[in-house]
Image 1 (cartoon, rainbow, N blue to C red):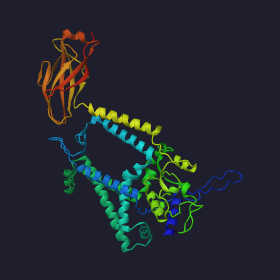
Image 2: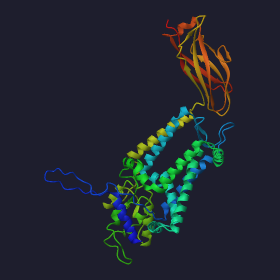
Image 3: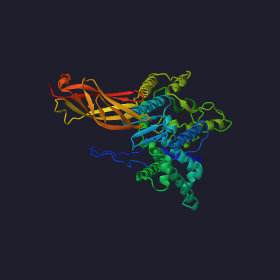
Image 4: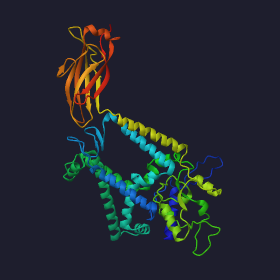
Length: 505
């Protein structure tokens, strides 16, 4: 087992950096440097060892919660009234709606989605500045599904040493059986993952029945196939390579950390000088680290946390559990590897007491920005107009002169009813004395009882005419005009300001 561990450590170190050899220059200095070997090393497979402890239990819990939300959310129901979808979370592209429990977002309200994304980004910045990449280590989909796939692999093929032996041994019926079962389960989970994703875009029970009877739209099958392939490849095959090479966040995180950020750290002031320790011998003149490499073999990224902070580290803290387990066995205090700050490490080396510093410029800025955007979002939702009117004036022709000398303008009106009940609207014009409205079912002075169904909109055309005697109201051939839509049942008003054009007097 020890040889296997040291061998893996050597492979990881070899894969972490490419070795270059340069040819010496000739007397004239004309020789160019040459590479002695390949520029890139092939990937060295990582076999994370199962550990037990607080952070491993937290990861189990987070995995259970996040997967339950992902697979179960499309099946939650939310009553919005008759003729409206009752799925709690639904991206209804055909009707251009996004339903999220009580919230319904129309296409022109996409700024709410933008606000939610800004809130998520600011929250991520704040958490990262305080406790490092906890998003990556616990809740990132890549981490969750990779952890799930590794758990299945461990269940079928055994823990780390058993998986290493199985991969090294020649093909046999046992190896073929275990590999086939593992990949079959992976593919099944990938299919369920892709299937759950498409349920967010249509009524889940209806689409599930269509999928089983092969009556679903072609795009549903295509997206399931796409997400099946990506889940299988990224979670089962690529694994840590996604975090290292594909994800930009490891490269951005450096701007989020500072000396007071809590990161998974090896306490070199306590652990060095490291080396094997025999039971019964003194601990004087040496560190607590016995160089067992259990922190390395437990790491799903294959790094050694004792080398310091590294881009590959996702802060999953499994190395903490692995080290604490060893410390318990050798009867030394836990916490050789722990969440720590670089400033506290300097304080301990200087003989000072470690301190917690959560309130600092970085966290204050992120918190204030988070509160500001949250306040804007809450205000926008609280003052959201559920009845709206949109007016577009005809541009060709700009106006029409009627036989009696009056001027007529045409308008396209869009009545929007975001409430879940039917409303009847009365359309009137304000701002110009003597102006009259005409259109379908028109009466002088307004349009009565234009019915708009729940959660829908209606397009109508109207004409506004201005008598010749009132043309003096036009300033340079133009005047402001307000189109008002009033709900007959409730008296709610929605208004839109447009213009009325006529000849320049």
